[in-house]
Image (cartoon, rainbow, N blue to C red; front, side, top):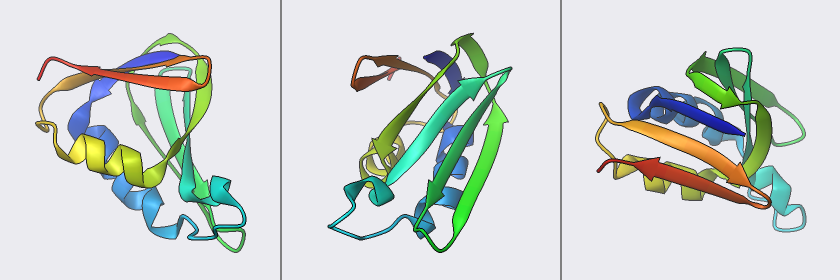
Length: 102
């Protein structure tokens, strides 16, 4: 997966779906977000097994794919970036690489 988007769009989407991520230590995947890049849009989804949320926003998709990432880690990281910046999200194996000019 490789895509490019504006930080503010990603931040807004994360703020929407991270509120229902689970705090279940027995199932760590419930504290993650699923980030999907396909057909000109980037989709973020989460669940706590009782409720699920999904939102999407536009971005430049260079390579389609999906990756799960810790909601807390992503939220903290993007909160330190300027809203107007463009960022590149790229998955390589088990890793998500986030690049920004700042």
